[in-house]
View 1 (cartoon, helix red, strand yellow):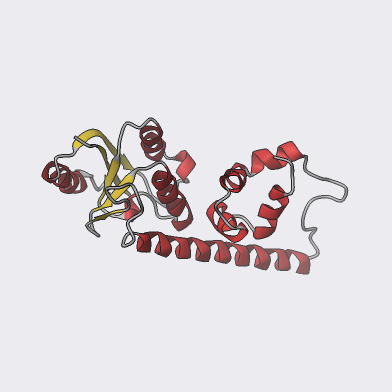
View 2 (spheres, one colour):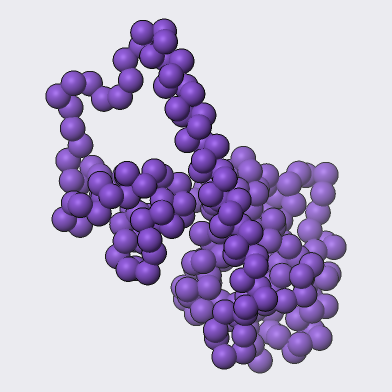
Length: 209
């Protein structure tokens, strides 16, 4: 039997995961999948970052430990509300060979042969576009804030003569280094995935990491 994990999330204590788990358990039973882990949490998908969510960390640990072959969710938003982080999680699980069954679409991200499901690729396209938009909006807010600070005569940027060491850059941008070392992403794609500017990706690329 194929080992799977059920993953459910609600946003507040006034809700519970029973409906989600009932739907996902039914899918598992129908397909004779073995449920080896059930992960539930009550947390806002937009207020906590991915690295702070124990449910996500638990899911990744199962995937890396090859304890599961699939993760079942009722909808992609159960993984999180931040499109950029959700897109990265979708990519990470896919790279680990974990197929994601999305109940409201009735499809999996991987085919039986382990290759990406072309139909499910639309999910990745949508979240990649949303992630790009988030990055652009953030950049626009930063530029607007800097312009206002300059108008008020405030200093922008690091103090004159200050600089970051190579080790500081490495520790500050581990995601950028990870995607650069993968060798399969463009500078723009890495910027979107890591939530940084393209210039930052180039700066990290130019150091000896």
